[in-house]
Length: 308
Image 1 (cartoon, rainbow, N blue to C red):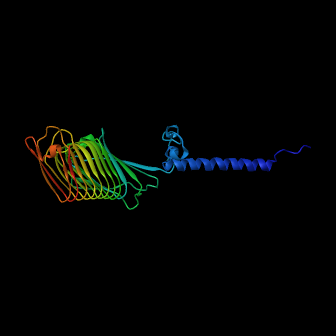
Image 2 (cartoon, helix red, strand yellow):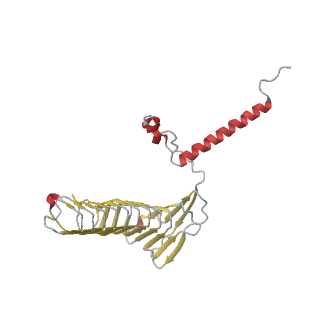
């Protein structure tokens, strides 16, 4: 009787090792992808052209969020509701307009979601708040029906979460975050208020018919659009504003950050600039232009003022 080259026990042992290797390898790949790993980030150390590695471990088209949970709910907006408020903790929030009738809210998290947001209606105001068991890593997506735009007010307050909004048409929009960032784009408003303590404020393609109010402690404020009358203050960050077509009155103050204004060509303005140690850089170093129809008041301690 011939002796077996590999015994049955050895075959079983090798099969187990193979299955364990595949399991550990797959788990490692999933962990790397979910952590944002890209082999191209280490191209310099490996002396490899990063473009040849650009698509390595790129599984964006596959659903690898095995631990992600979702909760969605639609809310009927009564005709008497003219204000919607969101009070959040560390959760991120994203809002868009959509062609529908109900307010749609989806919560997504890598942890278990046991409840939707707390809902309270008081008179014409509808308030949504996170509960004690709302996951801190949750991201909240809100779809607001177009019909809300003509007579409505939207307010969002969050502690450390980011706020991201695009394509809204509203009467009044107030956004406030302690340490999270605020990003706003492609929106048409009557009044806009943006406030952040340490997070950055970024906005572009914004149309504000009356007033834009901006405030930040240590984050930067960067934005563009037709912003109505502008009131803003910042401590240590910079203010960079680009006015597209129509210049109105501007009042800005800064401690150590610079203020940079890009003004439409041919605009008439008069600048009142008060500073301790900052410097002025404007066309021909002049404080006025044209018919001086718009008043620009700037106050800084050590920040510069740059007019383009």
